Length: 434
Image: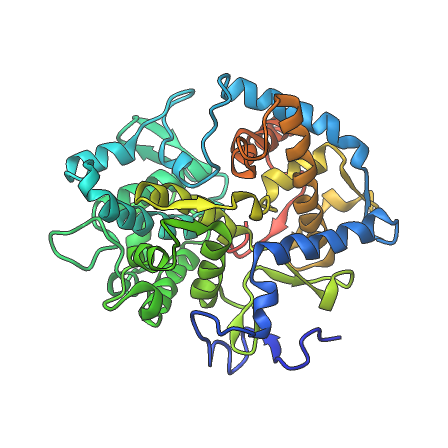
């Protein structure tokens, strides 16, 4: 049954997909009920209650496993951050990748070279940070097992998210997203719309012996990003530049304070049309939102990538003078490291003993259910971790629990249980979710 009878819920591939799309979202629009972190938590809780009651044919739920998971996560945090000073979980950590146990402060060095380290440049520095991080997050789909990036700053071969992060940082620093001659540190819609496969292949050192999964899709996503920014002057200005989002958010701040939920909602609406092949409600794309019968209206919003982008916006926004409040309104990220951790520790157990033996699609009910359970499970683990560390939610928000944290613990347990550290089961994805 359609929970929004006044709306038109359809696949994004339809003839009218995206037509009538408005940003900012008009008050009372039916899509608003699904485009928030509150909606993610609410609908995931509905699925979790369904599984916990024993009604699911796909998974069983074992909250008694939470203390053991929290102990493992707490130990991981203490190993990585003995002083418990943990940064936010964000793309910025990948920009710092170096050799084993080392970090490289590429952002500081870039700002120094550009003469942008002074307090009088803080607002432009924030715009540049946003210019950098939005395309970089969109480029962070799985790289595949064989791809590597040689980083000149650390003289290391980097792979996975770290390699993709540093490669996109270097591309940005060289002016790869700029349409302004002599002003490389910006991301302009005009340039993004002209990104081609050869540009990405060259920047990411792709060769026959160094293949990168989804090359065409990455270039297409950046072009679509440019088109959407160009069509959204209310948020990205005219001519459109991604960094102008800072000015939009600053204009909506109150006494220099802005809620994380507002940042997320802005990104969900403004960037919603970037994602291909998704559901649309009354002309508004719903993004990372999937069908599950146990949720109200049969839909479960998850918004993993956009929430991660929101987490990744915290540092440039704060550097620009804004205080981002209500961080724990955001949810944990339902992806293969966090979700793999909870799966490996049997918080959720598949009823099919052969579940891990074959690949799954992103939209199938089992994966939607596993991701919804991950969101609920991360909230339980986060509170138990704080109790173990003797820290409050205010001192140690979810953004730090994830970084310290569940994401690192998911990678750690995967490496202990499976050669090479892959997820506990495989997923077929177009790169816009995981």
